[in-house]
Image (cartoon, rainbow, N blue to C red; front, side, top):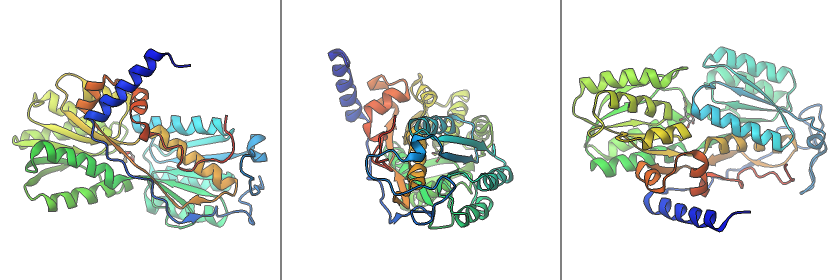
Length: 372
Ligand code: SR1
């Protein structure tokens, strides 16, 4: 039971955030519904799922017999840790065994992990990031073996799989909208990007269009690296770029590890008054960086990664149960500003999701049976 003072505090918090933060929310894209590759006439696995009457917990879930393999390309960094925590929480709620592997940035290892998940006859597989050329051959095998598959942030190369994404174009649009508002649409910008990661490639499409639409914006340097210490590596690169281009006004860094690295560089060079950072993603640590005194990181566009992890597991569970799932699931982001966070006194993701209820999307891949 909430205390009245808690409710008043919450309402005030929501009002404050609503007033100062730019909310740019889109509905979830509802693509053509896709049946599970297995559903329901061709069961996907030994667990023999049947069509589920609404409201009844499917027998294999009640018995705790469902195994979902989560095959990851990357696992380090706030985004990936939060995403996993959400996936694990949803798996527990649905009484599913989540078998997690990570390539830790090694694409061959991820492909091997994926092959093993197919061979081990997982009831469903979630592929989390990855490069199309390394994961698509094994995804084809999963489809041929009638293992239902959810692909997050990687093109599965088959309409049989459910493709889950954040709205990456909107993520970039929201961050760049803030950049444009602050710079007046002109000035030198450092861009942080690594090609090949599907979400970054989509954000890059928006950046390229943004430059065409705003000829006053001059990209003076492109930097970027993705590895197990992305932020530190980007900090070094950003320092060099800022020293080579002393007129830079803004850094577009659409991944939180990029933005954290850029923030470190700006602070170390004493440029916080001159260079502002526009990022993507959010975590409690990110909120700490954004709200600390003199932080150059002024805006980020984000979903709640834990919520996205939850959706991936729900979508996979629905496929196992032979339920219809939209083939394309897109999670909308919210724009979170430094000012909004500071004004509302938000210090962590839990507070943030209370203030931005749109960050939680229970309607996406809703499971029609009760979860614990
Ligand atoms: C290396 S790709 C990093 C991105 O993946 C997820 O989509 C997160 O939003 C993050 O920015």
